[in-house]
Image 1 (cartoon, rainbow, N blue to C red):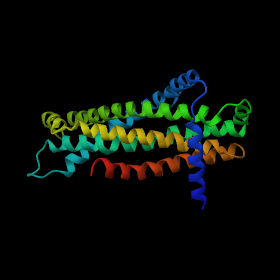
Image 2: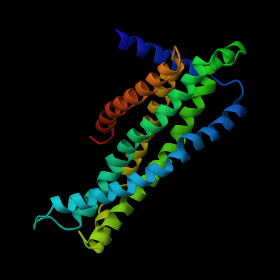
Image 3: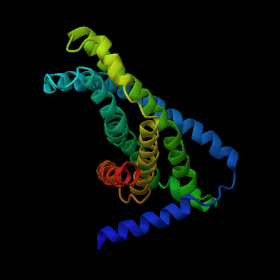
Amino acid sequence: MKLFTHIGNYLLLLAKILQRPQNATIYRQKIIIEMDNLGLESLGIVAIISVFMGAVVTIQTAFNTDHPLLPIYAVGFATRQSIILEFSPTIVSLILAGKVGSRIASEIGTMRVTEQIDALEIMGINSAGYLILPKIIASMIINPMLIVISIFLGVLGGWMASAITNVIPLSHYNYGILFEFAPYDVFYALVKTVVFAFLIASISGYFGYYTRGGALEVGHASTKAVVFSSIYIIIFNLILTQLLLV
């Protein structure tokens, strides 16, 4: 029953968040600030993970596809498909759920327990929309950009692994990453990213907004935000894959 209570409260909060803003100018300014806070500050960890995971995927694929009937360029092809279809949109989003989700929940939760949200309500401001909507929009704008960068760096990491370790000749790797490339795969990855960004920001905002108590409860809210965001990312990953690829 508690699950249904959370779902109901979450939907009611979304209805409150999506109300028409009273001052669009303020929201535009906050969206730009949140794009910096939630997106650009995550660029470093996304870049490092993408490069090294691309290298690892290439090396592992090369060692596990050592078959005379399998063309060598299949390593580059498999690396590209793994990065575009699953690693960058899903795994990186899970990492962002931990970094960004905890930040959103703790920030809003702290405002709740220090009664800053109550002050906004007294002034007649839609606190849910003012605090959470810019974070949702900023995440849905900046996260796809991070994923595009992640895809590029992941493929580059595989190329670097091929050049350094010589697990596959570079010419074959280059041919593999270009072999039968379908732009729809990138579209699929970006659609998933936008949905995941919405889930991360809205779920984290929900747990932060309904925090009650003190500093300890803020920590619990941050943990719940990361856990539930990750769970729903995995669930919607299955749903979107079924809808868009099958």
